[in-house]
Length: 319
Length: 319
Image (cartoon, each protein chain N blue to C red):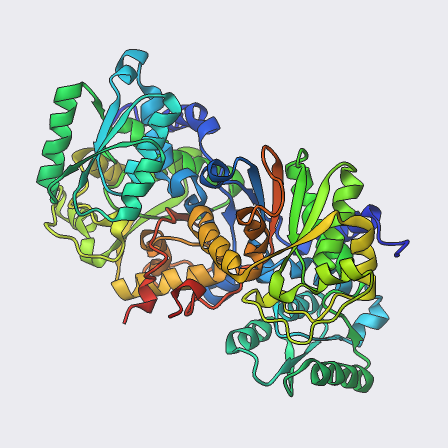
């Protein structure tokens, strides 16, 4: 358990990054409320800078570095939203960001990192090659590794979304949050319980990538070799020891949802909210569709984690 | 010229409808600004109740009725956003809304009106049959006709979007606004010039439905028989005498854009803003793409008018 990762650390992160992130709106939908018997409040991190909540953790980590550390630059391995967020945070601080990406990464992701001035180093596909590439760059250049979730500064940054959500909607009963590596869920739970001790925080995970749910059940970190889910932001092999301990201490439970429900939730949210969200962001609402959590009469916060998805191949249009 | 349609009337409308509409966010995009050399502020009426700015005008018109008038119910002919907005406004006041729709209207539009309790009366396709149907219903039932734009109460309501936009961003140099029947453009210009006399307001219209631009040039209302544009919200045959006079008195100009630019603008806005917007809402940004207005170094407000579009057939996916 972390002694330092408290609401105070998350509030300090918020003060540190406030000028460099968007205070995203919290939206509601009459139609979705009428269909469910609950009241939903969507924290729209798809409208965040670089299109995902990851801007928060990346900014907090990069802005927390001493000038001496910062001068060495930062490095990470990711082909997703953390990569673009880290490139952006480094650009704001005026330091180089090196991003190790698999050679088969989608061109849109490569473009996204490049648009924020990130230096891309290609490696073979596969987690082992990516980790090795990242470690090699760090050794060669002295760059500081900023991991996507296994880092207290990153987790504190992700928790700032919930500070804003509860400032805007103080009377929430429950927050639903997707689980990938567990960074967002950890930060969400610490912020929420710190601000409002009685609130419940529930993680939602694709059933086909349910390493966090399995880990909670087993009482230790469980790894899944090849998680296969449409929710590309949640295809992590496992949570970390840090996020495992934070989730176990602060989260009320994790439920799982099917791929069909994720797709249905994504489609419904696009239609009702008029927002472009990525599949991962639809996962909490899928728990509502599957009635996995008792929401009747409740005020429910959902974190719409990101909006970066390929607009040429929307999943419900696939043959 | 209207003597009564002033900023004061728009502010009164705002007070009247405030509790029944969403104060929509104003969003910006680092990527779009970097690509243009201007700073854009998007007023997100796609996030408005029922998915379009039309909720404003419909609420103001319905809430302005005396109790005696209201008891007779309201009627309009429309298959678009005004129909759903009027059904919603009537539902909020607890009175019936009758909507005359062509028998070939898309099912999504029918469902949308029905979801707010609107009573749908089908007629033959074509403007003449719709107007006749609407007049007949009004005569038979005593229902008050609430037209989509040719009405001071409706125009005053539409202007409230600009009151909010300028409250949030007081230092705009210019506002770009789509033109269909001219109700939104009229309300926008009256609100903007009233709040900030030096601001410029420019209408943007599809070149293939340029009745407003033609009318300004000719000095009288010009009618186009069958305007063919992807921007389905702007397929009006003509502006009205009322909106013509208001536009002529208050608007700095109208520019036109191609269908290709509208499509390109829609795609770019979806990608950069992570918002679902309908084709009509992309029309102002298309003017930027075509360099029809000098925007260099300017702070530009754009009204994203609505988000109701068929998610099964996105226009850039058409064969």
